[in-house]
Each structure stands twice: as C-alpha cells, then as structure tokens.
Amino acid sequence: MTTEYVYGNTPCFLHSKKINDAGNEHVDAVVYGVPWEGGVTWGDYTSCELGPKSMRLASGRYSGFLPELDAVDVFEHLTLGDLGDVTINWNDPEETMERITDFTKNHLWSRDIFPIGLGGDHSITYPIIKGLVEEQGKKVGIIHLDAHYDNMPSHGNDMYARNTPFARLYELDGVRNESLIHTGIHGPRNKPESGRFAKEAGAVTITSRDIRESGDIYKMADDIYEKASQDVDVVYLSICSDILDFAFNPGGPPDANGLSSYELLTLIHEFGKKGLVGMDFVEVYPETDVNQFSAHLASNIVLYVLAGVAKNKQK
Image (cartoon, rainbow, N blue to C red; front, side, top):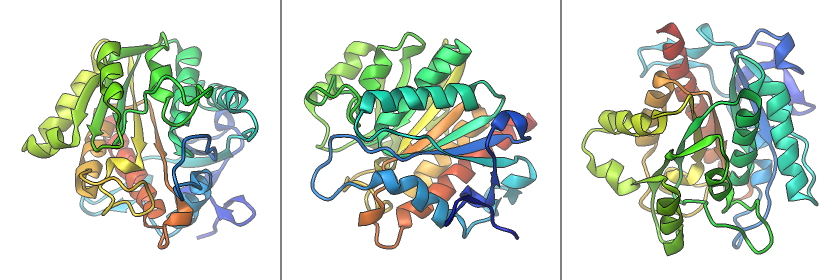
C-alpha cells in the first residue's frame, strides 16, 4: 500500500485519499483537522491543537475491517478523503471561528459528503454547525456526547472558549434547542449553573448514570436519536473524549464515572445507522498521552460511525 501524506511527515487519516477540493473528487466522507486550542485550560491539560496530527499518525495501524460488526469492511462501501486542516489565527479566536465556518461552508456543507472534524478543543463545534446552518438552511438537532455541558456564556471576555460552544449554539436560529441532547454528562467539573442554562434553553440532559442504568444500550440509542431528530432536518454528532471514563481515555481530561469504550462505540454506531449529517471528535491531549491511546481511539470512533453510515446508505 502506498501511503499518501496530508503533510510532509503526516499520513492521511486511515490511509485515505489526499484531496484538495471535495467537489472535484469522488469521496463519500471527508476528514479535516482543526488544530485550535483557545482558552480554559487547567494545569498540564493542553496540547489538543496537536490532536489532528496525532490522530492521523495513529490511524496508520488500521484497516476498515470490523469483525465484530458483521465483518463489515467500511472501505468496501465508502471512499474516504483527507482535506488537510483549517488554517487558524492564534491571536484571534473570533477570526478563527469565522475561518472554520467559511471552510466548512465552501468545502464540506456544499457537497454531498459526510464531514468528520478532528479537533482541537470543543469550541470548534459551534462554527462547524454555523456553517451547516448558513450553507444548507436546515434545522439541526445535535447529539452532544461529553462529560460537560460546555454552555457557559463566556470565559472572561472570550465568547468562543471551549466551555462556551453550546451557549452559542443555543443562540443559533438553525438549531432546535429541544433537539440538542447533552448526553453522558457527569462529574463535579460541571457547575450548577450549567444544568440550569441547559434547562432554560430547552436542551435535554442525559447523564452517564442514565445510560448505565437504562439496562439496554440499544434502546437508549433509539431514545437519544429520537429526541435529537424530532422536528429537525438533520442530526449532527459531536464527541468530546471525556465522555469516556479516564480508564478508557488516558489522553483526555481526568473525569471518572464516564462511559466505557464499548458503550460509546455501540451508541455512535447506532446513531450512524439511523442517519447523521456529520460529526466531530475533540479534546485529545497528545503531550499527556504517553502511549497515544486516545489518539488511537479516534480511528475506532470514526470507523464505528462510518460503519453505521454505510448501513444507512444501504437502506
């Protein structure tokens, strides 16, 4: 197999095809990186701007074959391209948000493809969905898998820090707040007002405990998707690595009582089967992930979603 490189020493994600314009290439899904880390860090939990590169490097070990999912080979059904990274401005968060929106509008949401954003911190989800709303004019439901609400009004004067994107999405006309499902929320790094903000906006909260004690992970996936898809045109999936217990996510924030990798992969595969318009995966910290386990996790997450997307297309 000849390896294509998205940059000089960085392979394309999952051996995909290097592309410069999704409109001129026959691809079903496109990976792109958003190497942005803004404000709100604590201690040594920084470096997620290096996430796209670390995830691409780790992906070189993997095929698209998933024996545990009816022996499906994802790449027999879908062609994947790698579009490289959004350019960012380290000195200007607002300009960076605009660049992300413009990139997704011009290269992704104007095409009939499945976009996969690799972060970066969670602030990138707002401009990605803003691009979807502006380009397609559709009403959007969101499945937000995370330990934290990320819905604070601001961080000091920064309206686009990683703890604010869902506050911005509550304000976005194209998002139906009642179909914004904060899923897997857990842990004391949430603030009391975050739950109140979600309730006031009309968003739905499902905790990690709700998922664990439901007794049926497949029914839970059905219920979450049903809520997210109500009265909207499309459903978008946003995953923060700390949805997982830190036992399964050593390169992410130190949050206990999260989901297992089995629970996460089962949920997102089911969501993919039911129909998604796109996804992102954020908050991997390569400098604290000695064995790059969380970077390797990205390949599994993307493949499980794409396996679901492939089954949805077959329907």
